[in-house]
Length: 277
Image 1: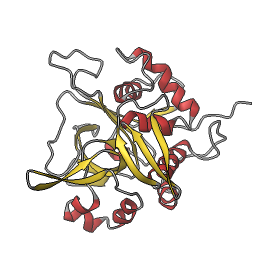
Image 2: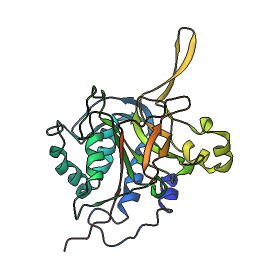
Image 3: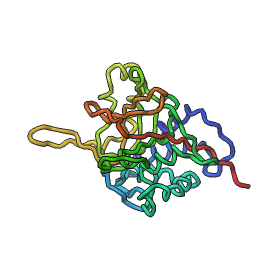
Image 4: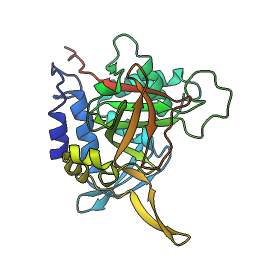
């Protein structure tokens, strides 16, 4: 929990009386996610694993075995902030094809954050530079963004994650974010960040090392060793920006494609909710 507390201390969020928790909701969210991720012994990426979004089993010696997909992982942690989670769930039927699913998928989070109604317990974060730990960043892939699309829809609706760092600059218009997510795609690790980023931010090595990277496994294919990713864990994702500073592209790991075409992004920050008297 030490890493989570250190990150939370930099949030700078107001702390009025809360209905969900005695601390700022963003700090609660990263605390929930960190507490689980730090206990990982085994994990696997599995679609729609349960009504709660993640299957969590004891592994022994206080460690955990977690099965989840990206939205299941976020939903499981956000459910500990019930007013916030229920607001997303209430929006879910408004997204085509999503009513009746066990929890909101990535496209629901993206469309909800991009169309927040008055009084919502979230604030949309409109620029990459303004992103903070405890924010939820989401994107939808082509054909799942609630807008006309003539091509074949992507197999997945998108991706969603809990942000664990402030933006880490990487040249003009780009920045890394450290996240905790569930994925089947290898992310940047500290060791694979550009050398200039490592040198400028050595503290990231300590932050990254607080979380087991058990989802990263090596396997031998055609005589070559490659890394296979499956499940919950830490990682850095490189994001690019549009001219207005909003998030416009992503790259999961070194050598991967930079993805932007027909992809839409949105970031939601959980807000304190007034105590009902």
